[in-house]
Amino acid sequence: ELLSLDDVRLVASDEIEEDQGKGKEREPQKLSKSLPGESVSESHILSPKLGGQKPKRLPSPRSLSNKNAHAGSLILRSPGIRSYSRVGRPVSPACSPNPSRTQSLDEDSIILPSENHRLPLHSQSPVVTRFADSISVPHIGFSVDLQTKRRMRKLLCSLEEMEDRLVHDYDQLPGLREMFEKELQEFAQAYFNYLCTANDKIMWNSIKPIPQDLLLSSLPSSSFDEEKFALSKSVILRLNGGKHSSLSTVAPECTLEIRKGLTFLDMAVKQASYLAQKYDEPVDLAFLNSFLTHEETLKILKDYDYHENVDINVFTQSRFPLLTKDTHQLMPENFVGSPDKWYPPGTGDVLATLLSCGMLREWIKQGKDIIFISNVDNLGATYNPTVAKYMLDHNIDYISEVTPYTPGDSHRSFITQYMGTPKVVPGRQVPSDKREAFLKQNHPVYTGNCWINLHALLKVMEGGNLKNLDVYAKTASYQGKKCIQFERKLASAIPLFAKSAVLVSPRSRFVPVRSANDLFLAQSNLYTVNEQEGTVELNSQRPYDSLPLIRLGENFQKHADYKARFEGIPSILELDRLTLGGDVRFGSNVTLGGSVIVLAKDGGSITIPSGTVLENKIVNGCLNVLQH
Image (cartoon, rainbow, N blue to C red; front, top):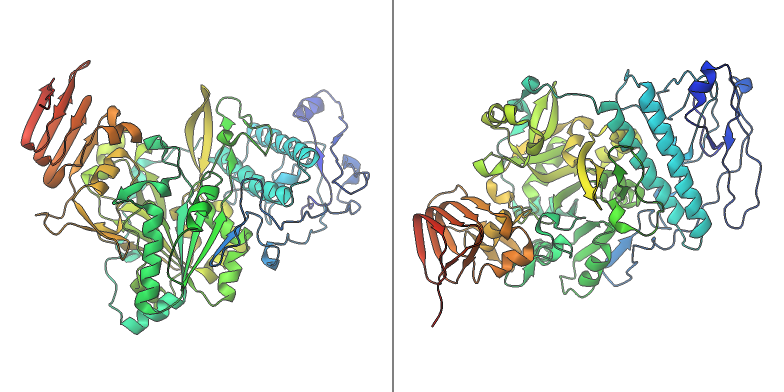
């Protein structure tokens, strides 16, 4: 058994092991601070003399009111739209903290508590911190070296110090502390998983294609009444946590205009309104925002005119602090302020957020069984009642949608089979010397569309299995410093469910807009937009199904520069390949076909005049056409 962190809060320095070697016994340092409205009480200090005895029970910290969200959230009381803080709704018992447990502590251990695992430190002084409570070893039997233990202890103590500043300086913000503890516990777990697996090398020869028995190539058709019933049992969730950093936009990605004034957010709401009208059935639509997108999304949604049978819920995911790459120091000094030192931790965070905000149990209470999760910037990610019906009929817990690989997908994520387990492999992580062999295996592309049984998800959450999600670390830059960001991908949850499958979907269900290349395709006549249904389809006039390969140079990557270089998006119905480099600009009504390459020389520029037709052409050098 392990000691609950509501019972005792202790920290110790990194020199404990060194002091032991010198025959010294260092007194553990006490870290205690009263909360607003409470009197200061003495904390019990554990020492080796306690042995296996249980310490005296300490009073649990006073729960702060969470009637309002934190400073970055806005509670909107407009009819039809509800906003939830990361802490959850005050009316939901699901958001209440678990009752603390009185547990015993063995000596000679540092406890990074979990239900089943103890991490021996060979130290005379047990060390426990508040943010260690939910941390567990990623895999049973995992060995943890001394450097990992020291780094983990250092981080946990830093989180303690940050919490002290929070309680001291921001106790007037109700609910902030609860949110802080939940988010930082998740961050500590992700960091620990990263430390335990940082030196692991992927054996690329062990990566195999997904076995056929796990793939669903097609689904049986369904009747209108069956689809209506499936919709009544479903929830639609759109992930809306990011800004288009690749396009250097300041506004949330959901506000990016795709066609005729329509944004991603417009199309998501139109899809829900169309479903409510078509099936005459209430539709539950939810948006998972981040601190980057929450307020602006709410401001837009409250002015929307949508079908009366659409019920919109809005809530926020957690945020993680940046960590310096070399010293693993926390970049932010405080939980409030400095938003550029924090980031949303990826799509995998949605599962923990659904539980912590109370919506998971609330939807189950309302009789919902299936949740469809997709990225808001995937124009092809529409709700398909046939998938929901199949899951209900066959008791499927989890379905992840994939689509066949095309040459333009080399930078996307793939679902593979690794060591007998489905695994998401980002294309950018494949070494250059392994890339050709990897791509030849034609692994399906992960679309980001997931279908999950809510009851199965609750079971996984209550079992604590989400702590085993893969953690993907990537390098970021902040004010010239290299930092680490941790991300958890939703598709990594496949092995956590007893009955899961991978559905091979047509390309029409995967129309992501993550870069200037994607935006060019989405805004072109390659796709037609159904404004009433809020959907896009591949233009029937295109002579073949494959998509053209688009490569836009650096001058097109910022959204403002991209817009300035096109008076109108060219017609590309018969285009196979397009490469643009340098200072290139287009007039209106330009038509491109076959393979087209336009490269402007350094210091020069090329302007393609309005009405030009280029087919299988290479344009190189300088070309400026003056209007007269």
